[in-house]
Length: 482
Image (cartoon, rainbow, N blue to C red; front, side, top):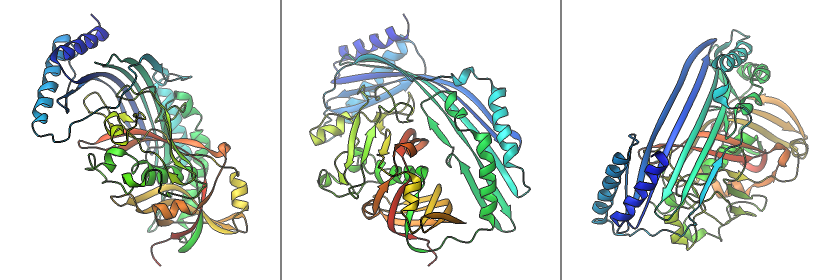
């Protein structure tokens, strides 16, 4: 028998054991990462990880167990272990789990890619990073130049006692470059396409080639050096235009996390707290202005939060989260959707075979508006254009936040002017999104990929995406010194 037969036999075994529900995920992940720093190869890693996890529901309580030994006998042993854990949990569980209905799909899904990243030689990848690194270091004030790439191929098979049998192959590619410039006691950084590991997508090596890392390195170095002698960003109440990747992290922290229904219900708050978007607010609460339309969409081709089916076998879908500024939807699982009297919108994912699925962001998007970036700047008489995340902080309910960016540019009489260093802005989530009066159009819209969203205990690293374009916000407090 092959692995598919083992999984089917295990599902039959779980049915014989009399579980209320059971599923098994077999996951095989090939990962490769490269890092170049100051003209040297700093890190080169390639690994292959595979195993399976079994989740069962017995007397309304969950049990989960996993193993990396892929034999029929081991799968039955782990199935027994999961059932025993569920039975033990049932003794102390006061709230019995119910699952929303789902169609038991039998299907396959495969990411569409043009270039298999694992068929591209290491020499070619390293040479590309070294070329960018050489351009970045063309000034002695550049003390750290760095370039990274990362690739995944994830093969999953999901089977359930309800009859689902789903095979998926998901490819992920990405990377980026950054510099740290130093002059005297002044230290500044610039990153491209975004900070904190760069940009990622469910695409092939063509996504990395499309970044034009070598061509962009000149601009990144120049801006870092200019920041060394730039004045401090002015403080006060300002009109801001945030660059797309900064809007993405704003969506991630102040919308994506608070709409996770397990966080709202208090069943998953160990890492990063709960949510201000309590159940009484659904369909009534004004989250932002009428210009703010936010969706959760796992069907977008290329988004890092895109897939065919989640880890409960629920088909990928698009859901309204905020419609014309009103909060209208959560991210749900089969278990939490029952609380709302709904079906799951398919957001349960685990970061590996040995982790139980959690509600995770898919592609959480600020939908595009009408103006171009040029039109938006021309329509702004006095303001600041802020780009690229540098630091962030947000409270446990996702209300009060502070973000620092790598660079600010003055906007005067509809034109970009001087650059400023160390911009920081603060706000309260509903007031901040309530001050948004414009989002740039689809030509400026991009799905930013974040490969390291932490949640859970033990922590799992989620791969999520955010489709955003530059957006304008009024009366935002900038600076913390005055």
